[in-house]
Length: 151
Image (cartoon, rainbow, N blue to C red; front, side):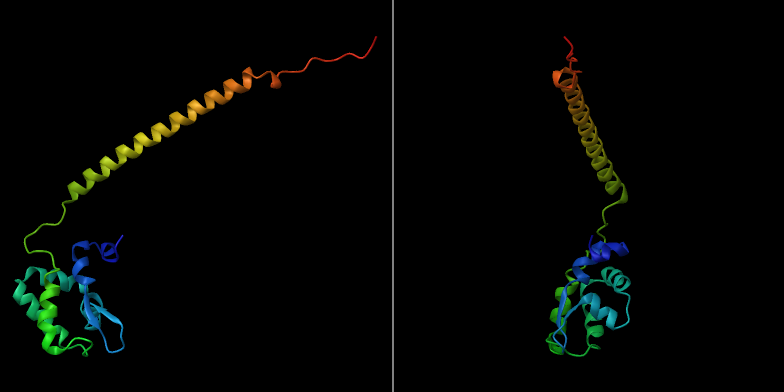
């Protein structure tokens, strides 16, 4: 499970976990950490930016990143960086995978799991049958005749 799928928005993973660069201390800065440092909710901001035209989203993101202290990127290169990052956003108008499709896949997985369980228990039953039949047919486990020592 990816970190953002916990929040229910995995379609933004590529965008939120894309690298912006390194900050002054050498720590990698992702879009997620940059938006968090700026006080934005990263998933809400990603959703809002994905609704905008690409150029507008890139300008909006560039103006937000301009508020960050400069790292290994230069203010002059912010437009290039944000254009690359905006390309990671899901396309406007593209619908995420419908819930019904996910439920169908889960049901198909359950069928496979159910048949595997059935085969497992069948194998256990056949093994048990052979074990019991071997033990009852083996004379080692029959009672031994008593030997009398009297003459």
